[in-house]
Image (cartoon, rainbow over the protein chains, first blue to last red):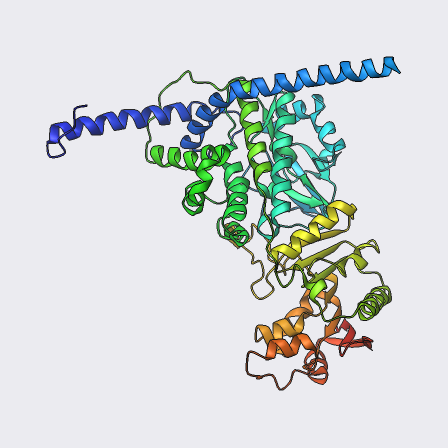
Amino acid sequence: MVKLNRNDPVELNVKRGVSSVRQMTLFTLGSNLMTDSLAYIDAGAGSMLIQAVVAGALTGAYFLKTQWKALKQVVGGFVSKSKRSGQ
Amino acid sequence: MTEGVRSAASFRDPSGFVFRRDGILYRQINGRYASDWKRLLSSGLHDALVASGRLIPAQIVALEFAFDDGAVEVIRPEPLGFLSYPYEWSFSQLKDAAILTLEVAEAALAQDMILKDASAYNVQFHRGKPVLIDTLSFTEYHEGEAWIAYRQFCQHFLAPLALMAYVDVRLAGLLRVYIDGIPVDLASNLLPGVTKLKPGLLTHLHLHAKASRQVADEKAKAPSATKISRTALRALLDSLKDTVNGLTWKPPKTDWGDYYSNTNYAEGAMGEKHRLVAEYLDAIDPKPASVWDLGANTGEFSRLAAQRGIPTVAWDIDPVAVDRGYQWVRQSGEANLLPLLQDLTNPSPDQGWAGAERDSLATRGPAGALMALALIHHLAIGNNVPLPQLARDLAPLGSWLILEFAPKEDSQVVRMLSTREDIFPDYHLEGVLTAFAPYFEVVRQSPIAGTVRTLLLLRRKN
């Protein structure tokens, strides 16, 4: 990895530029998750950003969780139905 | 019809506001909220939430009751017994309010709506249970949009609950300072490192704080196609619910939480006190519209008032005692009792915008009757409040006062005075009667058998 020379103003500006672009992207990502419906509170760009990241990451696990619940319900219903008919 | 008076606490949301006319509380629904209001009703969401006890019932009234021309509808919400604030709630109360908010958000999403705010002030304890009082919190959900109230939820609920659970329950007092919830960066700084090992707290508080810091000063805005799917939004709500449910608080042993097991009252004497307090309550004529039990501990004696159908607030300084009181209310289903936190030496002030958004303890009074059982020795001796000031400042809070006096011979008072100089020459029954005489008249006075204490029933002088 090439290290930036902190004493070099050109290299320092490059680093600042990269950082600004990254922050701008983060902000843009956050601010565009909002709609202009009847929102009256400040959602916070950082909050929208982390929400998008977290929600995205959780989706798979949530999908499996709901499917598992649904499966348990079906199996549970089948078992209790079998028990009832067995009696 | 008299002129309406707008609530000083209802001004932030342009969708509508709350006002009073002829002593009745109304909520005006403004034109800009019309389509969401229609959707809320037509989807069945409103009725379903009301039926499940999650949303305050409201009745649509004639438009002539409107506050101004901006109204498309006016509703009259069911009156609340008492308005309380999150900084007066115990851990379990705040947790239940958080879960309610998330359940309502989930139910709304199923009907293509979403909560546009998640303020803890939108929740009140009504008939012993948390209920959403802001009927205008719902807005249409657009596929792909994120939850705009996510940050507010984290600040109003998750941050204080995490601080209470992992640092100290008394940090809930920060809610009194930060009226829009505890900032996530502050919560992240205060929480111990171990909370970073908890996925929910890591993401919703620590990374949330970091992300907020990172974009804090940026003003740029450009188009982006990033969306949050409905399933992802459900996953987010589910994760928040898991995180809140995972927060537990193990109450430490406190003087007050275990007061009745450590008290100097013999069983017989306790029974006698119960009998006398009940008798005094019954002697108040007409029956008081409300009772405030000051220094109520777990609400043992507040229950006597509540069981008589009187809306009763059991105030206490100890979070353990208040939480136990709330657990009892939850288990028993007692609808007339509301345990709340209050430091009487520094009571809730008028605060918020213009100092009027949140009412002080006194502004929310007066109560029909006050109870101050085994309280005044703590204020007079424990906190050096002179008896005349105590009488003067209690008088505006209630028309009647049931007062228990513990003299210096009482073992609790002996214990209090054992570590300090006795600078209270006027602290005796005669001194109490003299101090209260300018404001109250004595209606009844009874020694509590089996103790050295005296119970007084006082009526405020007009």
